[in-house]
Image (tube, rainbow, N blue to C red; front, side):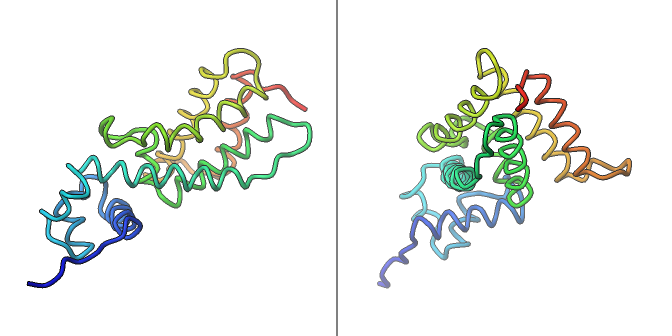
Length: 188
């Protein structure tokens, strides 16, 4: 009897992300992932109880990747509003490179498929701290508003929904400025 194929966690996550980005979130099934990594489906159940466990692995990986990317954004001197603008642009860029996996961060099909608290907490802490530094009052409503706008804009952009002409980058900057003003971001 041949020895079972050893699949690393990184290989498993890479396969989940490839399937999701190429064929869509619904294509991530126990069977499709097992096939992609060269194992039998029953063997995959030793690693994940159901497909939403697989999606959570990818969501956690995406959250960690995004936090690492955001941590590398240099902070401008004296302008907390610009920090938020840089974070917004980085979130949009991430959504452009991983549109389907980034959707798991903000609109997972279930609680089980969403990033785990341990993976999402650093992202939330980073966003809340940036909002708190730039906007008066409770940072949570402002952070939710900003995040919802960025995710909505990025989702529409990835779907090709902006068909009226004009420059989409200019539209993003216009919207970002409007949202930042709406949440009360203090200027430099």
